[in-house]
Image (cartoon, rainbow, N blue to C red; front, top):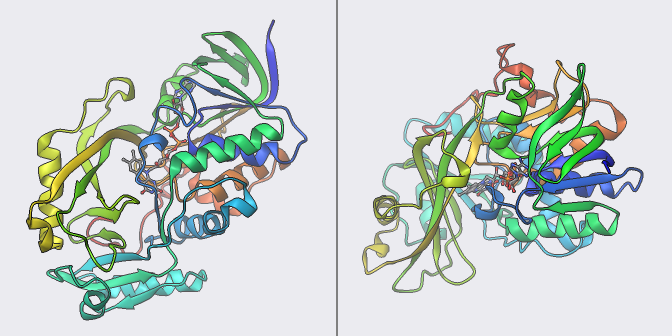
Length: 388
Ligand SMILES: Cc1cc2nc3c(=O)[nH]c(=O)nc-3n(C[C@H](O)[C@H](O)[C@H](O)COP(=O)(O)OP(=O)(O)OC[C@H]3O[C@@H](n4cnc5c(N)ncnc54)[C@H](O)[C@@H]3O)c2cc1C
């Protein structure tokens, strides 16, 4: 027998789960979510660093992060459950030559209502005295930002959605899209067909072959990224905040159990998520070397304490691709979040659910359409930094 739904979501990472939560809470539609593994899935979400920060060099992404912030701050009241948000404060270190850009970006972020201030390297060292200020020109400080747990956030989206009638199909891998003429009417999977009025692809890089199978191209590449953990030999005090160091192009934060989490970026593109190689000792050494440059105290017997190898899908301008596709009806995509999808997931899911249910455009999603690449409307910073 063919199963049916109003909305069929493919992928149970944080994006698919947020959309499912927002659709189900309206209680008006039959919503199904297929996940090839077991939620929170086998993709980026399960491995994410979980940074929650507002500092971006374009207003669109900053606005989505800022609209998502109340969810993280009041998760239990708004969604229910826990996302383990930790308000550690966030420092964005910006290198020499980019002071004017920082000033302009901070002005733009303040206009959006974001609480952010510019610190001199001396002010910064007062707040985090174990840092070396070398190469830092200015630091942007967000007292209210920090990090949260992407797995807990995803699971609580799904638990609440289930209470509102969401059906979750674990272990269901979508093989192809079912079409009639210029319309998608469902999917084919390892357990047969499911028909739906609208199919929503939230399956990260695996959206690409599904679209290819109906002759559509989406400009995405998977990229291997990861995180690793270090155990300092002595306590860092005051506690390490959440940081992006644009001078060296990495991010780091403390963890709940006294370790330091450090981001790892690689140049490995078009990796297969199902056969990803683990991080290497060279990756860990590089990350530790960068950290020791910024926090000299870590030169004393800092111990490697594990890591995670993962990936995300990257679009040409390193921002998500969201919306219906002009060529075909009954299909919506939300993918390509380019290493930054977690912090925007709550508001993004809310706005996507609005577009799906109301059949109207949400103005905050307009910059993210696939058509921007053909129309030369890439999301690009007016005032970039060295790495962002
Ligand atoms: C190491 C790392 C650190 C990160 N740090 C941050 C950070 O600090 N802050 C931040 O905001 N973002 C961060 N990100 C990015 C963020 O985690 C991702 O952008 C976000 O999780 C993407 O969510 P998603 O739901 O689009 O994709 P995914 O989490 O990959 O979910 C897609 C799901 O689809 C499923 N799937 C795939 N194909 C199929 C199929 N054919 N049928 C059924 N199911 C399928 C997969 O199993 C998967 O569960 C980081 C990512 C990584 C990897």
